[in-house]
Length: 467
Image (tube, one colour):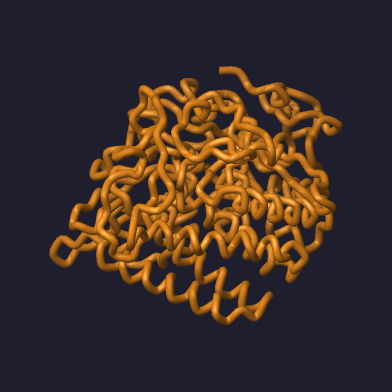
């Protein structure tokens, strides 16, 4: 598979250390980069000095700025800063992906005005998207355009202008709050949190409550005439039945695959943290104590229900389920897409305690039907790309959720040796053949890899001294 346009070998940052043709920069030429940040370039240079392995340093330099280099469009919309972030090879913006793609640059925004404008524009754009349709996962650049995604043309759901795909996933509403809260904490800037943002976040809480489905099934339904059954939902598009126990129904996973049971545990745990953040922000920005109480009460209810129904207990052993239905049925597996069970501490949705440690151990084992191990590496995949396909994202999450230097080095080694000669991370690769991969241009995976390297350089430098 060839690299997408704009990612071919090109001139750019070069150093004597990378004089060999094998390590020529894969970044677009400076004049063709979508966005340039001086603070990001400085961080790249300083981090490379901490990396002993030249191939790893080369990978980092290619991957970390990939979101800025290739996927962002900055401008103005309705008199305000506006930022649209595509996923890479799909010309649409996912709420989840766009938030995760820029997250690694957040520590730099306090001293970088250009980055602050980019973040403010994205926070505003995401609020606009949520206001268009809180049940949608992906959006078009033009808020009034009809979806041009081939797979969405025949979807049986309530499609709206500006929506690219309408799969209901809890994390689609959680990630923008994570980004907004992180931006506010890093900068103290309240500029993007106007009445439009306030209304969008109130709609988030309304949607969460609708999908508790206490009195009825709610307004959302989704069916797609497709050969792949995970692209649609059962029971006229309302999904598998769930007992109304206080958790939030989720019809699609972060992978955009249909859920097997209606209550996704990583998604519900993410919702709890999200509601606490909304309570904090609304209390500070607007003094709206009624809404603060509503958010905290809903967070308490979801947390209690998740604790009661979402934990698998086997004697004295306990660990998190991946999905449950409230009737007593529990599914254990894990999917590489974040939020996942493996990534719970990364998203600050649970502490690294005995329950998580046991969950993590089982997710990275044959207990998980989507854990794969081959001659090229080992890791977690999912139904989205099928059996044998390991997602580099899962290897990154394993490294993020350990302090064991040997384990970190093992993860970095696998990532370094499975890029298939491209100089970039991918969506997934075959367990025995890393040159057999999906998505040559997947900016979230690229930038997340860069975030991991910066994290290790800062917190665990020994992991990068010998890979």
